[in-house]
Image (tube, rainbow, N blue to C red; front, side):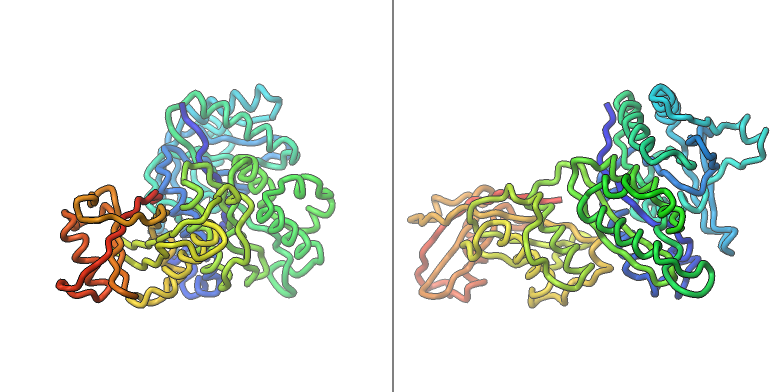
Length: 442
């Protein structure tokens, strides 16, 4: 039975595709970096199907459309780069089931198929609203099928019915699903061409960002329709679709920019089974790299992490260590603060590596090891290299090695490495301690 794993809201200006935007990409680097992060997170879930809702497909005043062509192709030919193209198979069983479930819930639906295309002249292709986020997802490794939806100008309250219909349709399929709501925010943020400035534009973007940060869909559903029209947005319905799909999941607001007078925002809602410690470590790194400051408090969704423990956080990039810092005894008020602090230390303070850069975040894998209290032992006989980590001490010198490390095959080797790390010579006497580790890794 298929299920919805995650949802994301992504902008769709073609200029954030490097082949199209070239040097202009640098002016919206925060958006580009956030797109890479969101795409990487979605691709890591290995979905069989991506549902993409775009405002720029075949659109009707009172109906949503679903493409049921066997495949969809798109390119950046209109923007001077015809070689930048994408081809996807369509998840036809899911598309057909979604059409039926949505219609059964009273939503007016239009089936876009070959006959419709031949009759109306509308081509079977990916519009730019779908192309741009799917470009980033493909770059991150996605190789599955898609379903292409355009909400038209449906009433905002009807978007929730589409989400329910999609969940019902997904339950009858085998593929796990992620959802992308594609859209830009206000187009009226700055004076001058191409759109100009309206006060409603900045206010709409402020409220949309607040809704994403607080995971508050009701804030947007209550907006006055005249105000929405004056704001000049194209992404509100896609945003509501993504937020409804991510209901009950932790939201991560990744970026907002208005460099070119249009609001670009990226947000993510994940429903996967990542443990709280791992999610907290990744959230901390995202926060610091996106905002340039350390988070001041633990997010509400991590409140379930209690107790005091030593913690190690390690980062890897392309299979190689990129940073590791930790504490074998607790130094902060609880384990959540311990995780956050050591995640930042691993990214910024490991003397073996330069600080992690924002563009690296999409490539990082994270591991969080939560340590039990050290237990003093009389000899090596009480160690097991797979089960126990070891701490060796001589006076004020201490060395620690985690359990179950690649290349560490026996307890003698484990203790020897820990002694070397502490600067303890082989002939010096040592006290031995062992500990266990609860390992959380992506």
